[in-house]
Length: 166
View 1: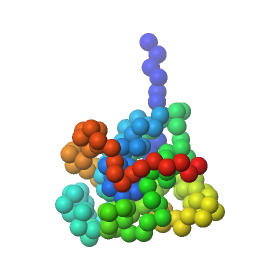
View 2: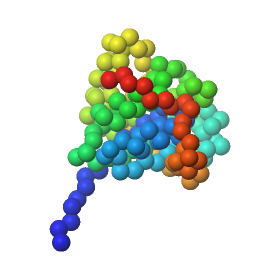
View 3: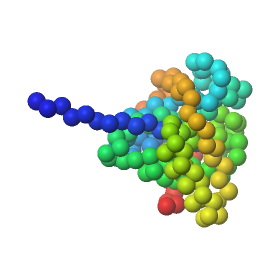
């Protein structure tokens, strides 16, 4: 029996509270898995109580593992931008602090260039884009009770509302 090999790629996106970001990205066709956690800070193996203080440098981030035969980074990025306020500086909705910043953590030059292209497109549309573009660093998986929070609660996000932009 012939085995099929699925190629996987990964994206790391931060847009405020990671619960809503994960909720939307997990529903995109071609996304194999998502995990919430922390990226960007210096503290090793940070915990939510540490990150939520805003003093660790970490950002609430979603790791998105996808099959590039079914979707691509560009489609993921479009949904990312259509489900948060990428113009807000220093937080997202009522979640204020550096840990809730809008950040694309790129894993390669292609992701960096695609993100730069979309920042330019959004700027041309008149949006003052606050999304930071930073190289990916260590992704620390968040606590189990944060994983797929809205699915567990049978609820939908209040901060991450889909709106068509592209």
